Length: 122
Picture 1 (tube, one colour):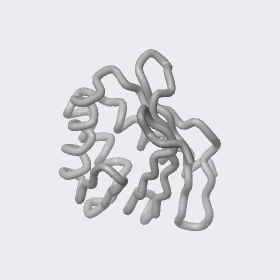
Picture 2 (cartoon, rainbow, N blue to C red):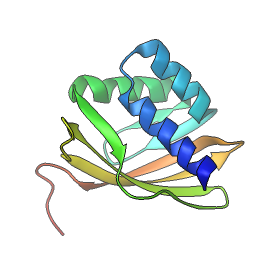
Picture 3 (cartoon, rainbow, N blue to C red):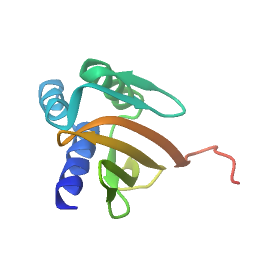
């Protein structure tokens, strides 16, 4: 589990890194070359597409910081983790992501939003 936890820590670090060069280095370390990301609001393909997607989120939500909110769970090459983000340690948005790992890197991530402002409660 330690390797998967470290991988998800690197994934979260990608979302929090605002320096473009350092963010790209983190993406190169955490994601496969042809990785994909999809959630209900956006998607990205390849490291460049994922980098652009993260930069867009940072522009829309300046000062928001992501963090893992529950222990990372893994089975074989699959991993599930929950996260929260917001400014100044607040939890404004949260979700659960499912990922596939290949050669120690993320190859596909599917994100689900668990809570967000204005989101209808089930």
